[in-house]
Image (cartoon, rainbow, N blue to C red):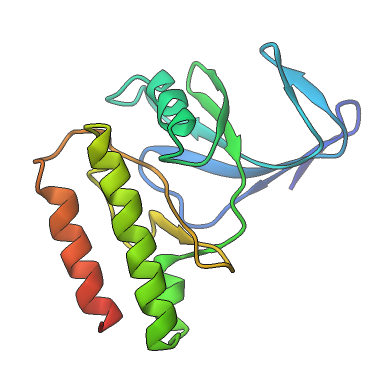
Length: 168
């Protein structure tokens, strides 16, 4: 964990890094301003992309304004600061063997979120079990989108696979 006493923050590298970026939990112990954006004290995700992504990172701000991904606060070069969502990956959710009613609720939330993406003519294109977060209230969030770099049916095919794993 990296700590800077003059700015009062901590950085902790998170597990499950992908090929695209190194992901940190950023904990601010006091409010800070980054690139003109004021952030309150609290937890955030800081993503440091290893190379320029194949999409415009500013598109993440548009997705977050539409509530398709967690709120994005700062995009600067290859750095993105966004909301920290307290939850578990969909894979961890599957491993915990929840009741059928809860699995149905999560699937309904997944379906609704995916429909919302498609209503905005957006495709995630990488809906694997580690790019879906489930909160303790069973809300779902999609993370790490590849943004329209797939066939229009790709997300729906992945949703059908998810339904099989949920056994509903």
